[in-house]
Image (cartoon, rainbow, N blue to C red; front, side, top):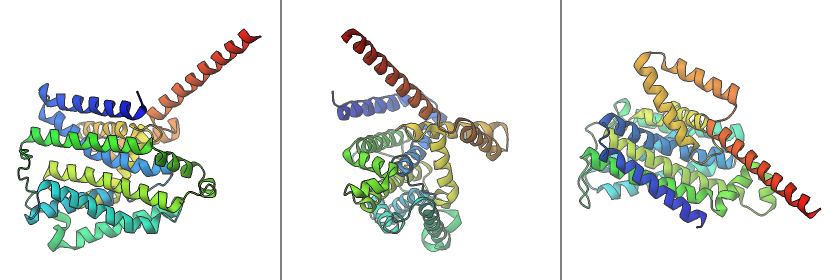
Length: 330
């Protein structure tokens, strides 16, 4: 079985597991937690396309999370679009926004790229706050987001909304997996490891970075749409710098070199947040200590460490096999 079909099979298995949750009678709190994790997981995993695979650290990725939520919410509130049409419109809007911003940012490297993305995010955030008549300002989109039926699907029903979000989430995960295992994905790794060598080999580095930037923005916008559907609104904090910081924390908590590492980090961060809120008001202090322990102690995510140990064992086993083969020849 090829890697592609294996990955698609695993995606199908993941979807089945998610769909079993409501069938097994899971509480609404568990389903709400999973839906939050799916929305923020797409934000973190899309950001890792830039950080883990391309070597571009963005401090402003949440602006695309917010753009998807606001574009979708405004389209639905206009009453002129069905849910699929508003969904497509939000992704196209985010793609155009990312294309314009990315064309400026991707020609810069390292800290300059990071802070320029942060500057654009603060610009988008202030537009959301300042354009009160259109975005609702600091109150967010007022009046909720309509959820008319389409193709027999009623998203006003929480179970159907959960199933809809699960299907979209798995579809985005499968698409990202195909991207990172494709020749384009390995091109991004080459750019991450040695940008000068990539350019010497004839790769248009700026173009590859821009394509990755737009793809990651579109996936982040899907996460924003899922969250907007779940909370029936869109709020300025979706696009604030702290949301981008949370996405980076998720990557640190899970690991950037393992494909599902950011998703694992998302679950950890959400659990830590819920537990600390339940027992203490010092949420930021607890999360800060956890991040410090990981950064200063482990220096990488838990899944990164596990992957490295498995790889070292595989290499050691391969070396022993080679040594045994050489001994037989002698």
